[in-house]
Image (cartoon, rainbow, N blue to C red; front, side, top):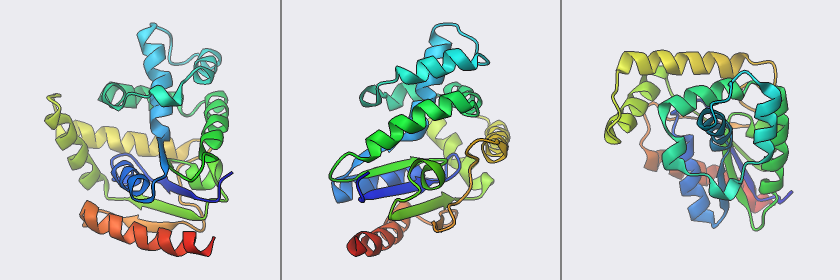
Length: 212
């Protein structure tokens, strides 16, 4: 694995994706939103009319996902996110995707991966680990605004309920639960602009990468 790995974890709508993309551009690194890989599995199952409860089929689907063809515009749909959260608790699916994510992490000159278990499972030796979070209410407001901006019907209370359910599923699963790595730097973006979060993350990354 390349030593130039920035691992970013956190719950839904915490701002970790925007931060990851900015860091990748800043350092000239490759970027992978690992959540999209789970969404891609869910999307394929939905498109083919398959059951979201069939773990063996979901695992086979995971093996066929092309990381270079992930379409954020399609995969960001709210219903796909809900389906992905169900698929992501399946150990066979996680095993297939984690192995592929680790191969991606070794891409020179460096990579930025964001998800739920990057610093704890996928890249536990990453020199830079960030855990990006915000209050459920702030995250629900962000997600509702994103949905409204793309013309999707929005209901803040429903989005907040969905956020809380996903948090419970992600944190409560037995395989690779969402939690900060012991050596991760915590960034609570509830009261931070993306610019402030970016500057804080750069300071952390610069210090760690310079040591390597």
